[in-house]
Image (spheres, rainbow, N blue to C red):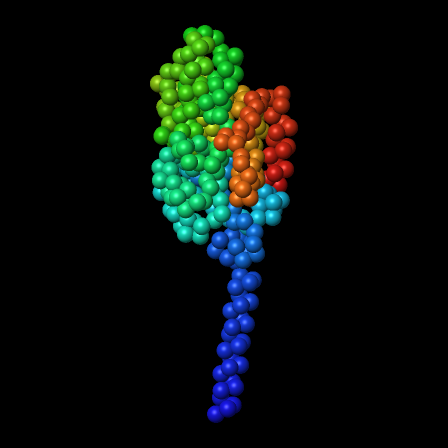
Length: 325
């Protein structure tokens, strides 16, 4: 009897030790690096997409900041920015884990209600790349998209003459990023006396841009310039223009490696470059400041730059280094 009792106590002790070790060494649900158990802040980053280089640059910026600032970092992303339901589900699931701060790149205003629930739980929400009309956001870190569109419009106008006709490829319908960029171009074109004869959505997608651009050029053969709300669509538009042996200036926005390489080889005319890497990096950096009780600006501007054949090469080298190409 005593022997059985001894064996039971010994087994119970072993089980307790194993359970204790598992709790210390296993990855916690609240972060990649051990969760709250190690005393480090838990910073979560959620992006609206993962299918384009732009998002991968933001991801690299966030992950570098996780390392540099020694935080527990969780990174999540929707498969594509057109899938609004997916990003909402990701945000809802993450809320259960209650990170110390959330850095979010939303796609549309549809994500605002779930982000409000983070705020109600006392979790600061920092927006990057895409701003929302929401007073309780902690900050917006990114480009002024209206200004980016305006700069693109002004540059395109410099390549054209008063009275010329242009086409616009919009992004996802209802997305503030697209609407603001297009509005900037519209105002610049009106000021320069240039007509926008076609403005259609291609969902920030290269393949859709090809089909949309084909339709536009067929219906409007006198188009002298093209603006696209991102570089992916610019590359799609260029495929069509090249296939028709046309010489039409095309300008996009983002500054992706494909666009920069095309510009360097006399393909696309220009791009208004953003820095998604800096958005991801500064999102984590400023989230940590807020967690530590510091006050940050309500809006943190990430600079933009018009890149042409003269200066695209340097940016291409920088991006390829970040992505280890």
